[in-house]
Length: 151
Image (cartoon, rainbow, N blue to C red; front, side, top):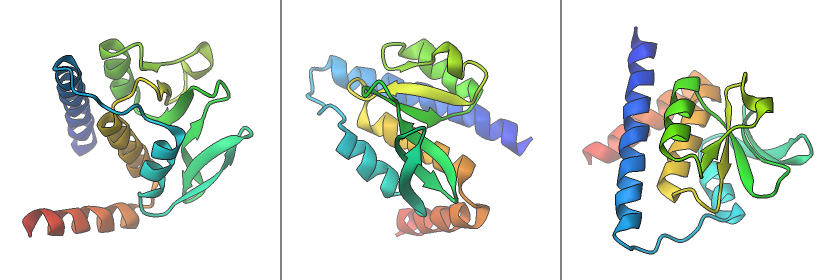
C-alpha cells in the first residue's frame, strides 16, 4: 500500500509543480531555458550518479542503471518515469513531455529540454534516481534532507 500511496503523491506533486511552473511562466518571468550543461549538473548532483553512455549517447547512471540519457534527436532527454506520472505529465504539457511508439511499453519518457522548467526536470531526475539507486543511498539522501530541513 505504501508504494501505491507514493505513486499517488508523485502524481499530485507532478500536477502541482506543473501548475506552479505554468503560473510562473504566465506572469512573464524569464525562466532560463534548460541546456545540456544544466541537465548534466542536475543529474551529477545526485549521490552515486555517474556519466556514461547508452545507445551511443551521453547517459547518467546510478549503480550501473540508466536513469536518463540524451536522445539521438539532440533536443530531448529520455528519463525513467513511472507510467502514471508519465501520463499526467504528457497530458498536462505535451509540448514538453512526450513518447514515441518505441517507448510506449517502457517506463521512459522524452523531455524537450528547451521547454522544460528546471524545477520540473530536477524532480524528474530525482524520481528516476530514487527508482534506480540502492535503497541505502536513498535512505542516506533522505536522512540528510531531513536534517537540513529541521535545522
